[in-house]
Length: 112
Image 1 (cartoon, rainbow, N blue to C red):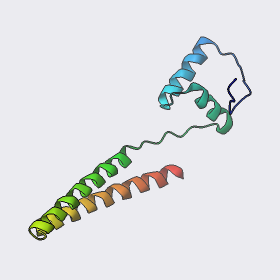
Image 2 (image 1 turned 135 degrees about the vertical axis):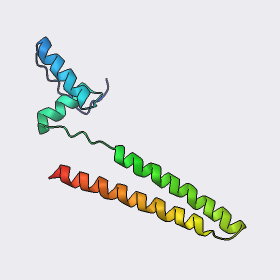
Image 3 (image 1 turned 180 degrees about the horizontal axis):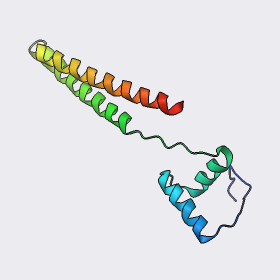
């Protein structure tokens, strides 16, 4: 017999309409485990679903900067540093700062 972290089972009954509403809310919360959703709602009364699209954009920009830095390192070793490469890096860093400021301001306003 496996040792469960949660060893107390709870049961309750719902009608078809309530089940549809619960399933719709689980889907809207983007949760794959209905039990986890119901447990979270019963304990906390709310579930926060965070949109991470902005963070994914930051990661994409960071990858682009990493690629640019590698290209600059290769060029610096071969030909010396080019001013155009430095300007590209500055532009990418500015884009990241803008994304971070936007993400942080949205996170702070959502938590208040």
